[in-house]
Image (cartoon, rainbow, N blue to C red):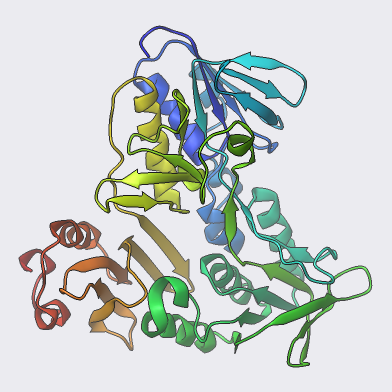
Length: 406
């Protein structure tokens, strides 16, 4: 696309905001319309369960761009506005206020939405999700008021919410079906590190938990488990995962399967329609298969890549998945993708939680790596993953062998 026209970005998210920024940086002179259904200008989600939730980050720090950025770049930002339908054939979009927008290129950056549990009492006041800035504000108020918080689900959101609440003085019970937190992502051995971390900070972890109901007179006052146990609480946080927001794409006839299916350039089955961020299930050249990633770095970098490709650059998105987490005094970075049966190799001091951890395939090639309270090694970790070379597990576990010599 070389001539000025209209590029419509559906989703005033991190991916959408970075795409709009990149379009201007790349010299695009046409109309850029960025539409989001939330009342806020685009913001980043990690602080909502980390620094902002915990009170160490100011509200202004969560936004992708400062006030006035969009106006200065001639980016038409419409908050509190829904896109109700898109027509890839006619290249039009219907907005919730009845307006029809004609576009030349379209980016779907609609993200994901939290999964809800079909339980009695799940709609009571005090049953919270943690996805939006408004959600984080509500949970901050709960933490300030004190009492006991029950967190359902020990994935990243659940663990970070539990850590923020416990650090803020609440009593916390963490309910999870798996035996350790983060077992699905990190496996039982590394998940055990996080189990010890939370227990050392006073969190009650209930493994094998099955929630039957949330009870209370108008608001959440207790949760009832399948084993008959009842836990009194001031509030409940549901952190049981998210689902990609694909309704617009499905209704428009785009190929959808666990997200909007896109090629390596992030273009969908409909020419001129791209997707980026949590909603995009993309062909990944490094893995030779589709990958959908629900993390900050992916949203940021796919937004930039999609923008360039809407301008005809033909750039393939090849970055390795990357994410980070902060819980209490434990900070980590993770790169790559590991399968459930991967071999785990650790180097460093487990007792001090200063580790670099690798997941290896049966041929001892690194699939993923994680640094826990060890910094400035992520580039070396990614280089080892990209090399696809078998490594000597003994040398890999030896802190005396520099990573860049492996």
